[in-house]
Length: 276
Image (cartoon, rainbow, N blue to C red):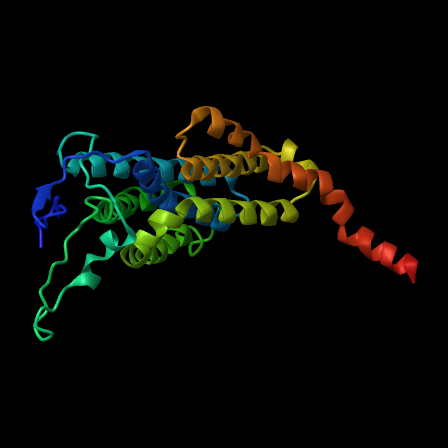
């Protein structure tokens, strides 16, 4: 077992992690940092009802909490006081799950070799979530109490209660599926953002999408998520080959807008009725 901040080399000797995370590692950390923010925004929107002014302030506060938590997490990580972090390179999936590879040389006693081979990608996420939770508990209740006068007494704190549920879920997700998420997150982003965009657009009128500011913001944020997914898959290794792929970002939305009129349920029903 190696001390924190070290991992074994080919000769099974513990070496200090002196590398820095590559672009894909940062994209993974960005994805894990985005998860609580997106969930905060979703539940604030879900529970705020028609009070858009109070929702906007809560959205800004949630962004502030997560941004500060991210900066503080980087500052307390080694080297302390710097936004740079040193890390070990991820070589394979089993690097994430060293606890499953404790050897038993004599088949009786187990030698415990569990250490963070992917330092600090596994534990830094937990530290970030802890800071997010602390900042939310310090800032949000005061803000909600001040501004959410239009909401009922029980409703105004519901987005905070939701966070108290989803933070443990995210923590377990990272603890159990950290390595799987590391390899699958670009595809998860693309699939989820496509599905949620399709659901959102089907729930709202096509004409409203371009007129109402709120809906336009949701559309653009989905596009940003598409772009993030595409960048994560391509890693932008070959710029001239990968940058044109970003032109595909608005394609699903345009496809929906162009084909929505052909799949209007009332029209299909009326045509079916005429056919009979």
